[in-house]
Image 1 (cartoon, rainbow, N blue to C red):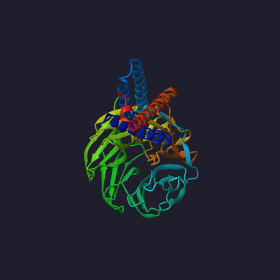
Image 2 (tube, rainbow, N blue to C red):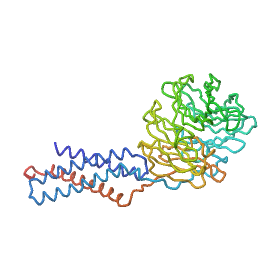
Image 3 (tube, rainbow, N blue to C red):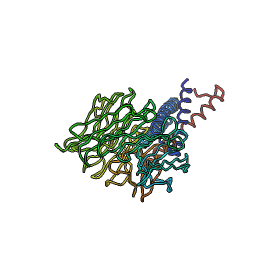
Image 4 (cartoon, one colour):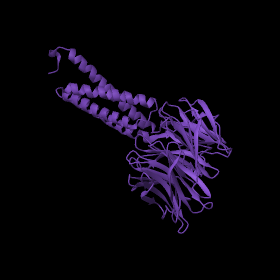
Length: 479
């Protein structure tokens, strides 16, 4: 029975170790699988070591001492290797990005999404029109559609793939909100416009809702950099307005992202600021299905966090939210909340002129942040699950539209585990993938490799011995 247990653990360890080695060769982001595999592997070494010690108990003291020393050494190596394997992803760093396309139309890239068939859709633009671009799964260009509304300058910076295979684009044209629907080939099916009543309008967020319709949010103001208000629009699947809401008060408000919640309502990230007193806040607003405010929570507004600007938010796997942006003339700022808006932690990054413009939650529970440094240069920051920075990198000459206050879907995790990012470089659209390499010290990498190799040899040796033992006559077994 004990031999069967050893055999089972040994085979499990061999399979999981081989899986980890193959996944590392493929540069896959499988942190938690690696951890599980190595923990099971270490457990297997414990079982194997115990078995060998018991086997040698009936031998002389010297053999017993040597066997204990050998198995203890291998066990330490295996456990050390397991620890490095678990934390190894935190020692990885971004390699130089590989440009995927150099001939895309437009001067600025806004958003990129991967579709169900593995292909990609992007929206890019120049000063006069928007381009909807389709790439295959190998990043080859399939088609490009030029979009212009009534011969007006048309920059539709918001993009969303839709449940019917088509696409939605949104922006501001001639000071009116514009929502446009295309089919799967990028041909326009309908266009809707909305008027907030403000002299100056900005559209900041657009999403498809569960009923097939759309929700849009922006802000209006009477004068540049003046007090303003949020304008929220809900439409049906054909772009017809169902209802709209205006959120106004003694402060200026600028929404950034709309997230539809499981109860059919909405959570919207926002920045609120006032001139007297001179302060600002990150704000999270919870609304019901019809846009009525249920609660709102603010963050910052005092001491070192006097004037934050919220660029975006994402829903996290634990049911909470991650909000990010920057602190005026200080640094980038990230706030993590639970599902009721209670702050769990916050972190700052970079120096003056830094900002966070997007985020992905990694499989290991950390976050990959799209960043801006020096108010213009794009880059990435990797953090652990509580926002502690692990590494950061900047891409020379790469910028994001609007720069410091960008909040587009410019960073995605593709199915082949590449991280894909879109932006601008040298007045052209920049599309690139970013890989990672392990940056643990060489001695630690070697120790981890030795521990795995030693444990695999040990398990394989035991399997061979057990197989021979089964074939041997009973009288040859040790007494």
